[in-house]
Length: 355
Image 1 (cartoon, rainbow, N blue to C red):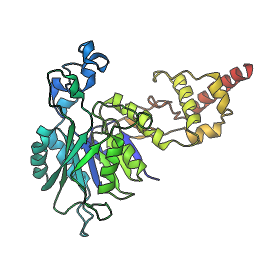
Image 2: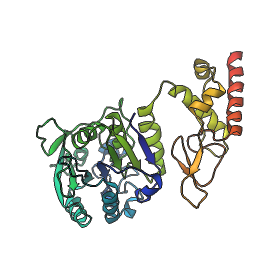
Image 3: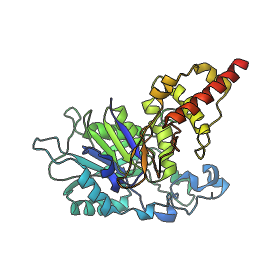
Image 4: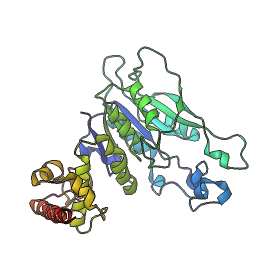
């Protein structure tokens, strides 16, 4: 089974996680368009309708972290993380960078500084445009852009011997299939098409600016191993919960969700859990200690050598110090924590019997 890992960390710290060398890096770098970030987004207006006037997002940047992004550091990272070019033809790695049209030359120039000597552009054509909300605009933007970067040898290309145009149709994902998490989220279907062309099943795909986790989800569903980094905690949490967990859903997933809620209630200082109804517990009981140990218990491992920081083996979240429960996913980490979970389960089962 393919691996899928998202780390709440900066991509510069990749060495901490022993990630294997990548066949393909895909990233949607910050566009650095500042206060005009939502200018081509319906959220500029209240309810997405210009008749309602501007929303609180008008004249705001997408993310507070955009100003900290350094493209030189990004290129250095990618050059280190991509696998070396093999002797065999048609096996070389590549990098795809989504960017604004105005950034394309900058991406190319910085790429050359760090060993990506060759490139070609990709264009993505939409059948819609949020800019139609701007009453003063007559010609509206309906395209997205990316640059494929590689070192010397042409990258791996898989399309059954057929050519591929350098433009792709941009189709929005169905909300039934994939959640909308991030303002600049790319369609999973489109990402799948790119991953199919540049990789084989079992290859490594890395997204240094993972955002919604859409790239990781696309790679995982195609049987590729995927790794990503996201510095914003809110996006990280949503990506894990809404994009990645559903992809790895096991038959026992719903029962594990109930356990997570119980664990978070038993864990002081953790995120408040959703309220589990007696009816829901009744549908999945009995829950044994063996199930808790097998399905849900986690362990702390060292996150950064020489510090007290630790990483949960269940969700990958890094904390400053060990606690009985993971403060993000609620997993019990000690025998005492498991006992607390079992006590909660028994109490809730007694409530069920009363009903």
